[in-house]
Structure formats: structure tokens, C-alpha cells
Image (cartoon, rainbow, N blue to C red):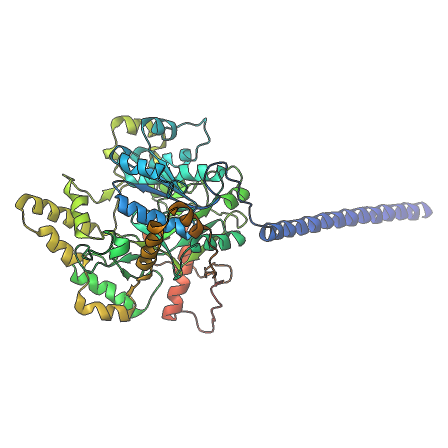
Length: 547
């Protein structure tokens, strides 16, 4: 009996000891879990609270700061001077200009390279055969950013301007990252970055500084579009550019959802032979914070997402094309919040698109084309050699798609050709019918908010041009405008405080439905629901995180 008691006692001691060991082990496990959780929280706090990425010191002749990448062809000297001086005065410190047919623009390129008024900010590139062999060929032994663009666009590079623009944007991003560019914005020669201030000098720089302070990796700026009132530029006292001659603009319905404003767009299409109110895109343009993105995603390529954004992840471009080819729905693979933060400007900072600005430009644009097809990304246009070169990525080739307002472009081309063959005025009649605003409806459109008058861009350009042409050192004066500190901060929107409503508009721009645009799509959803008061009963919408 005593033996059994001793055995039971020893057994109980072993059980108690084992329980203590297990409790100790469990406590240690919980302790390590707690330490790990605290570490994770501290890491996230550090990523959110740490200072913005320092801008790399410029290793080139250009100043550090925000930059623009653009693709030009056949741009006149007067046009180039206006566009360059405007953006330099706003605070952009480097303008990457890739010339699409440099052999035809030698005189303009030489002037920009040699004139000290502009050479300090203009960075010209003339892609030739050697350039294309270096950057447009599949090569897994180099770290060129283009290697992440070629699967989707390589086969189209020689036939589609959009493909070349994307490849040029990737080159500018890689150069800019190494040479002190902070933000890189991608816009065209017929677009201006507009900041709603009477004195715009330095205003763009301030906007991008604010975004950098908040550690955003990406930003988007919505766009408006000109509305011509006459077929051609009629003010003989002003320079012959749309920046000076056009002051009436269509307001994007992507961010204004009043019933009256939307009705104008529908009315326009019905009265203008099916031509859309907006002739171009409606999803804005994007910029990427090269230094911040590199800090959060070290060693990864910066990849354009079509020509309207920079991708949140270097894999996006090929993934979207592959999903499209497989007939799968767009699903946004998760990009951790530590790696990607985007802001959207809807109002104070915008892209102004001077598309189809006058009849003479339309005649020039369509007159030399013997054939015209509004479809883009037709791989059959590539040579057999080009198709074979990129065959390894065939499943990723961007598929054929239509242009915005293809009704207008197809019919305008036909009208120009008929005019050439008959000597009559078919192009003039079609341009007037589809592009010009009816003076009798002008006031109603203005009151509805569908269009607006803006003289500030023209007036600022005229004032700036007068100062530069009267200065003995226009380059130094332009640098002074460039370095000015804008007085005000501008509001931007983020989704950090907005309700996580999953909108699914059927009439959104195509690009807003792609994975890259989940963020902007949500913001547009909030604005639309707020306008139409579609929120569920009892929901109160907090401020849109506007700062």
C-alpha cells in the first residue's frame, strides 16, 4: 500500500512537473508570440512614421526634383517653347523628351540642346537603331526596366505609338531613379499639368513635395478636355498654339456627377452623329515617386501601366495581359500597404488635354494616311521577324483594342480624304458638326457645370513669355520661377478614411476597371454615391481624407 502511494506520489510529481514544463513552454510560446506581435506593430509604425525617402543627389547636369516624360513628333518651335517654359516655371526640373521621328525634328532638337534658356531642363533622346537594339530586345542578362514592358508591348513597338511611349517611360524612370528625380509624370505634347493658382510658378513642385512628405508612392491627376469654339485659331495677336487660343474646357464627368452635367454629355452624343462628348480618355494621368517606391520595393523595376499610370507592382503589366488572354476576370493580387500608397487629385491639380484642337491640325493628322484603322495593338502589323523575336511572350502580347471616339476618328479621316480628292470642304463641315460647341447652348452648358471657362493658363503663359523675352538672361529667370515656393497646399484624396464600398460601375473608363485602378475606382465610387445620395440609411460619410 505504501509502495503504491509512493508510486502514485511520484507519478503525480511527474504529472505536475510535466504540467509546469508545458505551462512554462506555453508561457514562453505566448511570450515570443507577444514579442513578435509587438515587433510587427513597431515595424508597421516605423514604415508609416519614418521620414520620406531622401531624394538621391543628382549625378547629372539636371537638378533633383519632379520630372515629366513625354514623346514628341513634329512639334513646332512655338509649341515647344510654350510647353517647356510653362512646365519648367511650375517647378519640374527635368523634361525627358523622346523624339519619335528624330530625323524629322533635327532643327528643333538642336535648338533645345543649345539654347541656355531651355537646355538646363530639357533632356532630349533620339532613339535610333542602336538604341532599339540595346533596350528593345529580349535580354535576361540585363536589369533594364524595359524587360518588364517588352512582354506586353515589344511586338507592337514599331507599329504602335502607345507601346513606344510605355518603353520610353520605363527608360526615363530608370535614368531618373539613378539621377535624383523625385516624381515622374507621364503626359503628352498636347497636355498641360494645370494647378489652379493665379501665379502657378513653383506650384507643381509644392504639390509633389507634399505628396512626398506623406510618403505616397503613386499619384493620379484627373483630366479635362478643350471644347473648341471656332474651327481654327482666329486671334492673330496670340501665338498659334491651343494653350493660348483655347480657353473653354469640358469638365470630366468622372468626378462630377450632377444630373444636368451628365445630361449634356448624352445630349451632345445624340446631336453630333454619335461622337462622344469627351474625345479622349477620362481616367487622368499618373505619376510615380521613384525614390519612395525604390525604398519600399528595393531593386524592383518601375513599370508603366499603359500610358496613363505607373503600375503598383512590376508584374502588373504582364499579368493583366495574361488574365485577359485567358478570359479570366481582373483580380488584383495583393500589394502590401507598406509597398504601395496612392493619392488622387481631382480638382485643384489636373491634366488639361488639348485634343483635336483645330481643323488644320486634323487635316494634317489624317491627310497623309492612305489607310486608317482606329484599332490599336494589332500584332499582325508586326513583321514576321518581330513576331518571332517576341514569340516566347506571345501569351502576354497586348490584344487589339479600339480607340476612344473611334466614330469621330474614322469619319474625320474619310472627310479629309474626300476633301483632298474633290477640292471641297468635307473636313471643315465634319469638324464643325462634331467638335464645336453650339453658341446657343453655351450658357446652359456652363450653368450645368459640364464646361467651364479658364483664362488663367493663357494669361500665365502670356505673362511668362513676356518676362522671358524681355530678359537678358531668360534661362536664369525661368530657373527663378522654377524654384519659387508656392504659398498653398492642395487637397488630395486617399482611401484611408473612406468607407470600403466596392463599386462596380459598368460605364467607368476601361482602365479604371483594371487591377491597377482599384484605388481610383473606389474614390470615384464614393463621389458618385455621395452625389446621388445612394448611401444606405444611417451611413454618414466622413471627409474624403482631403488635406
